[in-house]
Image (tube, rainbow, N blue to C red):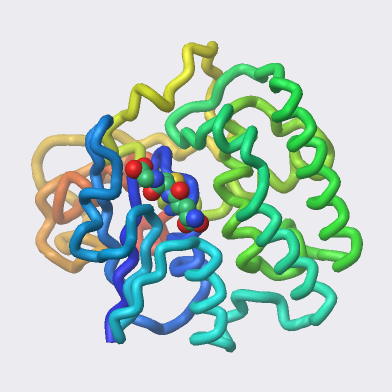
Length: 294
Ligand SMILES: N[C@@H](CCC(=O)N[C@@H](CS)C(=O)NCC(=O)O)C(=O)O
């Protein structure tokens, strides 16, 4: 009974991030394998999904029974129905209705923002002046985010109380605003900061930074600024296998690649495990547990 989630390049594919968060932010107990597609610059995703027809876009979720869900909201609603106790939607009716309305608005709208300011988790730019169509969508975001927090009296950093599908679906928008320097309005600022601090989002970004090819057509020639999320703890790659641990904190396999942090050395079973940890050590609970007990 395994689900397969198929996603695109972790640095640039917005809906893929939203669906991945749905499967990583909520405890379904389901077994999930994730397939990461690497489209060529020109070829696009479609041809890589031939085995999963009729899917032509990512994310695509294939269920154990063989249903192919190739739309983020379909994935969200199907997961919420299948796993009613996982908390995909808030249980409070007012919060749930508000979360549903916002998630659907995100999915159906914000076309100018989505085309003019593509998601790019690799970089943050100096604040950009938004084109007018983008500016009115930015106004709309501040309005609906403020509304949701107000009517649900959210006591968390999230829109409608506990983290819900609405937050997962807005996560790529939050990173977009961070990338283009538009994270300054009161509600927007706090909400973007909450997403950038979210350990799940930090893990997705760390994996993207270490493994994904760059897509030049998404990059912009704007001056850059440091990524506005938490500053990763300093660590560096080192040669050899001399480490405080003998087994990789993620797989339990023997150590082949090491890093140094706070003058101590820790090992991993491959370059990717080491790389994702170097990119953001504190995003990885298994590594932090190892660090704390060593
Ligand atoms: N309605 C779909 C849209 C998904 C979508 O547009 N995905 C884009 C990437 S973010 C895609 O796969 N594009 C095809 C390509 O890049 O070749 C959803 O909500 O998931």
